[in-house]
Each structure stands twice: as C-alpha cells, then as structure tokens.
Length: 384
Ligand code: ZN
Image 1 (tube, protein in one colour):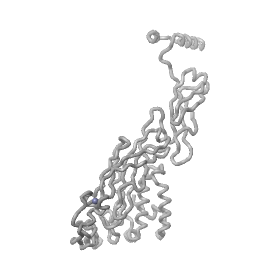
Image 2: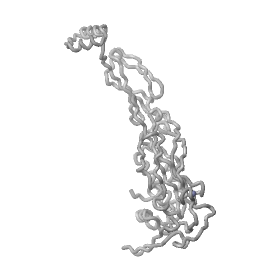
Image 3: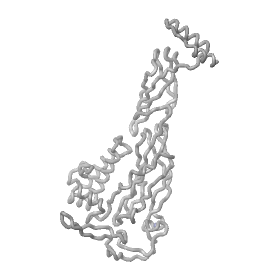
Image 4: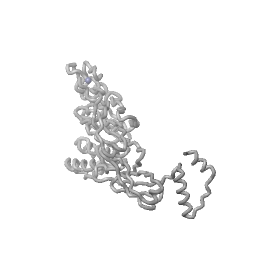
C-alpha cells in the first residue's frame, strides 16, 4: 500500500524534473486503465499520479524528503504540513463508491462534490475531483467500437462570479481571524515533542479576505451543477468492467488547478448467441443429424456479417471448431481473437411418416432393434 514515491516512479532520489516527467509518462502509459488489463491498474495509476504530483512540487518534495513516506502521508491526511501551502489535498478522495449501477446509458448519477464542510483548503491551486459514471453497451458495440453521446450533470465553474464565490464589486476586508494569512497555526504537544501545524482559516476558507456579498448563483461556492453533453469514444474490443478516462472532463480545479477527469465504467451486456471469453467468442451451432453424418457447408451470422464453415463428415455433437481471427477485436492492438463454434446435433421432436420409415430402415440396416414404445406412436400420430 504505502510504497515510496521514488520507487513508484522508478527514479533515484536525486532525479531531476525531466527524469520524473519521463518516468511518469512511461508509468502512466503502462497503467492507464484504458490500456492495461491488470485488475489493479486503476490503483497503480492513481499511485503513479500521486507520486508525480508530490515529486514535481518543489515544496512538497522537500517536505516528503524530510518527513519520509509514512509521516508525509499522515500529515497530508490530517490536512497539510507547514510550508507545503495547501495544494495536494486528496485529489482521489470521493472516487469509487459512486457506481451508480448499470441502468440506462444516460444515467448521470454524480455525487455532488460540493465542499463537505466549506470547501476545504483554498490557498493553492488544486486539481478538481475525478468524477465517475457508467455506460452500458451491447456486444455488437463492443465489437465495432462506437461514439456515444452522454449527458452528465457535473460541477462547473460558476459563470456569474468566475469561480470566485463573490460578485466582482463586493467589498473586500482582511480576515480578522487569521489576519489575512489564510492559515491558523496550532501548536500540539506530542510524544515526539512540540509539533506546529498549520490549518486553513475557517473564517475565510484560506483566502485571507472576507467579502461583503456572496454570489447568489453558486451561493459562494464558486461552482454550479451543469448538464454537459459529451461524446464518449468507446474503442473496439472494450471489455466488461473496463474504465474509460476522459481527461479534464471532471470537476473544475480550484485556484487555477487543472480539472479532474471523468471516469466511465463500461458494462458490456451479455449477447443471446455469443459468449465472450476475453477476445474469444463461443457460438453454439445447431445442425441436423444428416449434416453431421454427411458433412455440410453451413453459413451463420456473426457480429460482423455472415461466415461459412465446413462441418466435416462424421461430426459428433459437442465437437468444437475454431475459426481463427473471427473473435473480438483486440483492444488497442491489431488482430482479433478466435471464434469457437460448438456443434450441436439436433434430434427432431416430430417426424413425418416418411422420415419415420426411413429411420426405421436405417436402424434395421444397422442391425439395431428398437423397441418403440406405444406412447411414442401416439405422439407421432398426434403431430400430423
Ligand atoms: Zn458564483
């Protein structure tokens, strides 16, 4: 769980900014949930992102080096450490746990990321929250890929106050509680000695300034819920449970910080005719007894047009044939999986008189004696 940020990125302790950037790009590409099939890719991706965020920030990196991993994380959880100037926070808090279930493709069940207690630390740039929603598609769509329009309700920067939370002409006054510093310092006695902790000023939310009016549109929050219509590009070969990430389409950043991302969890509905196993597909093909005996060329519909297949002479019921490259496209790679065709010989439930006589002759020619039951004849007669 708590892996050193330098190890996460695979760089040395004295790596410079460029090295960290390069390492981040490499790792992010590896673990990007769009790309990676690893079940914990999302988790790893988050750690890589977090490691970059800390190591690219001069102040945070200095604090990290000084405090070590565990103490740094604890300090951050408690809400800041001296000298780090806000920022950071927990850009990944609030993720997960939203789910929203499957439902219609236009479900836009977003948790409202409004504050939870007055907006948190406000003093530095802060990345917006990642938002999560879900999209249900069918197997044909997963086969071909698609662009789907989705309407989502998400927080956006308030257009009336431009995110400031107060009208431009409101009177400003230095916050008396923190004397304009935005931070309040608290000294705590711990077993390790005196610890000085800075906290965001509650009165002004870290801004150091109080205003005579709050924006009525956003109620001072700086953000409002808005509907946005987005086009989601679902790549061919996507699997059930995979997550797409739309960069910068999440909640707006604060104080010039970047927007969060929008994460879209994909549900691929089961298909009535095709079973999926990774990139392979399984199809059950019913054939008649004579087809199984004599062999035949059969044609059937796949997810991508019709396909012909030779059923060889003497095929047994339950035999499986592989059609190479006729399965699902491989996500972000070339080629397709295979289509497995499981042949099922269908026993007729109703026979005409002619068919019955032919089958009896067939049995006799093979030296078989079949003790046909009374009830069986009844059924045949009734079916005429
Ligand atoms: Zn506003």
